[in-house]
Length: 201
Image: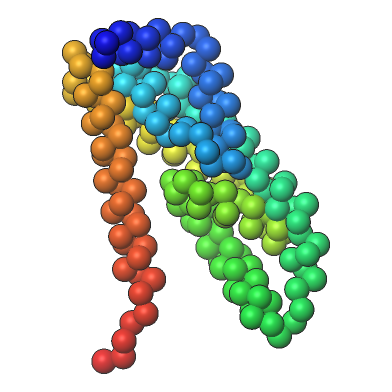
């Protein structure tokens, strides 16, 4: 039964349609974080270790999908820009909006790139960038870097698992998912520790 499922997955992932599927999953996941785009790219990367799909095309499909989906999120934010700009001065929400705007102006590029690796967090970041009027040209530049690095990260992680466990695709996929989970948990731990208020000595 398990062997049949693995063979079925192999047939689906080694099909030429996998590039379109990866693009679509990555795009939709960017503004509607319900599809497991990371999982699909990692799984495809596992099979790329044996030659199909092509690793470079897989990486580019994932990056292009992420770029397209992030821009949909950005446009959704632009549509909601008017209510954000009408926030009443002096309110807590107004102070929060000004703080987010200043943070984006100072470290927007870094935030956009890092948020790409956080499911759900990337959607909030890209929508917020659009709503607060972050320049589209700068957003596109940093988002292209984010999409390429994310596509490379996911596909190469799967590829590494595929090369490490060549004769066991299921174990290779579990290896890729496990490493991705550990990296995500480590990043969340670092973010949590850095966000803790420091007590005066």
